[in-house]
Image (cartoon, rainbow over all chains, first blue to last red; front, side, top):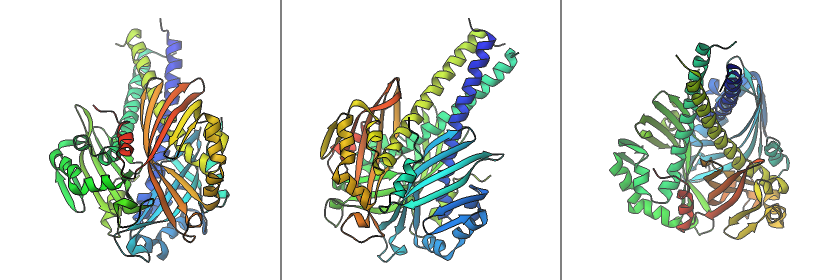
Length: 170
Length: 170
Length: 170
């Protein structure tokens, strides 16, 4: 027969497991929201995915803090991508939660409409394929990005190393 | 010590949380099944993802009801894509469940084999990148699509707006 | 009032449901780890995703056992892709768990940097879009692949059939 001590332990274990599942799904949704937010020019909402002093480090630019991230979204360069037709296609992330911290890695493709590049409209090109590494932390308002690093997969060893560094070894 | 009233409340809360997780995963599987079904020409099964009078609204065509959706799959145009080699590559969806209703947004890429277009075989092209917005409802047989809207990301503001409209603001 | 027999049944049901969710997420992570591992040339870790005598069957090659899979990763051909810049972009998998066995299907895109092909650097091409079918089994150390089959989506009916064979019919 089940006694209350056993029930209490099983409940606590289930609550812990369910929390871990919810964390993984919440982080996945956060990462998948990046594309819709950035492609629609939602500068404040993009920046709000990060902690206030979070870092977004891409090949050509290191942004420190929400203001610099929002400024990138508002820049002429980024607004040009939007005007021409652009998809920041983020691949399904591989998420590893460890208490109140987490790491995620994913590929991303920047896909441009013909009108956004030299060619004619009606056809799309992959401008770049990128390795992404995300560090996240749980705060009072849920998960936020502390650091995202992106490196184009152009043959440099650091780019795939960034991806594999987020895959736990057994 | 844990009493039965407390246990009952924790069990009920866990059942609710687990249901929410299962809903998110079931909707994700439903959306991810679209590509395999449509690329294999499974017309009835594609249509069965929608409610009987569900709507599928894409740029060039508005389909109302399962029969019109099935007819699209059986059309010469769609069969031509299949014969040439085609991938309806659906990105991981961002799913938001609200009781018996849900919204999901995702990118999709239509990728064509060389033989399916003007070029030579052995190389693939991205014919289009599309913003997708899905409305779903839980019915007696599980989740079904009530309305899916797709707009090519060709620079029109409505396309990224469609994506961001499915991302909850805090 | 809730009695202990009812509580026991609800706990057992929740444990079962949570296990099913965790299985689906674990298999998703396993499949999503393939890209980072193969693009970084982590030959042993790639092979370790499979059971010892697991099979990886692609159009041009059937690999049987972990040694042959590791050898593919170490081959001059694969190392050439890495050196030039390569993304094995694996789409979000549709996973169906059935006890200690599972099936998953997904699309994948092999995306090459300009330097890895005839063209110039700074632009990427989709070399191929592939249908993937995974069989997995739960063992003493968690889920492992027993057989993965990949077929390029070049118009052959077997390629989309492979995808749809992994989608349960109702």
